[in-house]
Length: 306
Figure 1 (cartoon, rainbow, N blue to C red):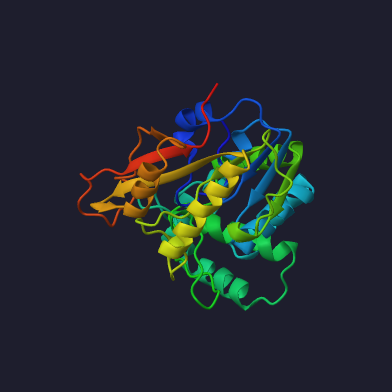
Figure 2: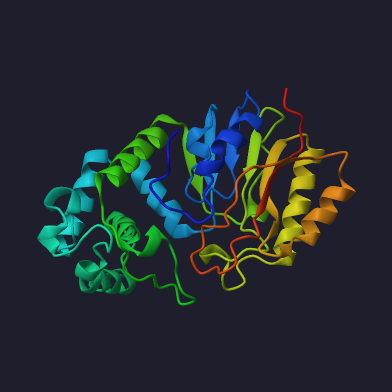
């Protein structure tokens, strides 16, 4: 299985062995409605792939990775690393930067990273270089995450790692896959996504921000009860149109329950099937003191697997 070159919060790579067998075998058009890091879509066989997300930076980066020459893309990434004199441990080793593996390379990269971040946030030209600069910044940022403040500025601090060979190989494999697929990228709110052309042969995978969890994509009221209600109505629309779909979500997490989703499931228990997944994100948040309360993750489908 291929893994996304982006360490996107809520990525489903570790859950793929449980999720993919629950998907239909005969998919014409696969729609990844909240594609995030694209971990699911790049591992699904279909005639056509449609990736959608509300993060315009993310979608623009994917378009560039798909449409540009791979060698040119990699050359630009290394040119950015060289321009800001960022570390390349895979080439020079930790001793060269007076750092070690356990503490990471952040101490060396900090000032250089902040300069790169400042240049990115001050840039007014949103060209290919701008989005590849964003990719490098994500690679060198804390936990390789993506986060923008309310003013639209990238605001993560420097991380402990750099652009190593594993990251490069994941990026190359990802580029090769989205070029090989009949892939299309869009930046739309799910309410505005056109489902009129979809048929019973198509499949919509839905992995929205989780109402009861906290992550960068769920800050600044990015996802709320009203959005959750609209999404459940959207799923009911797909079901009435006999368009197959699957929803990833959590029923409980860290003492909280998604009562809206639980009640919707109970109300429509003859229509939807709930598959309980055997994976917990309990240890994924280093801020959490109580890691004993596991997350109950589910995949909800509107079809029966043949």
